[in-house]
Amino acid sequence: MKLTREVLSEEYGNYEDAPALSLEGRGLTQLRDIGLCAGVEYLSIRFNSLLSLREVSNCRHMWILDAQQNRLRDTDGLNAFAALGTLVLSGNDLQLSALRPLEAVVIIHLEASLAKGSRKEVVRTLPGMCQAGTVDL
Image (cartoon, rainbow, N blue to C red; front, top):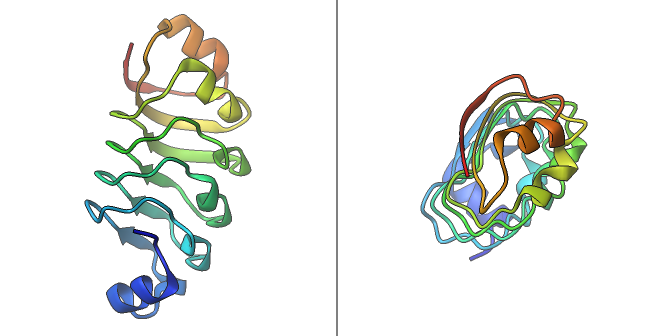
């Protein structure tokens, strides 16, 4: 299922100004119109079937992104942010190389599970990371 303007309008009404969106467990495969939610600061999209977060790059005020338990293989699009307060990527199909687009992003708190790699490699890949809450390798 694609996240469309119609779905957002049905669920949130005035979605353009919504500071928080919870779209958990909806069977989403794409976030096509999430960029219309310009004011969103908190987005929970856990327990879906998303492969990409590219569309999230249009949500310029994003501070907390919970994308746990999807089918993500990359973090492309997240490099549009200067900083993120919390980024949750646990339970996805990520390799260490998938974090490289985040190397210039200041991340206050990261939770991720990676197929392989070491904590030292994660820190080297993400020099702007302040705290790794849970980095399962």
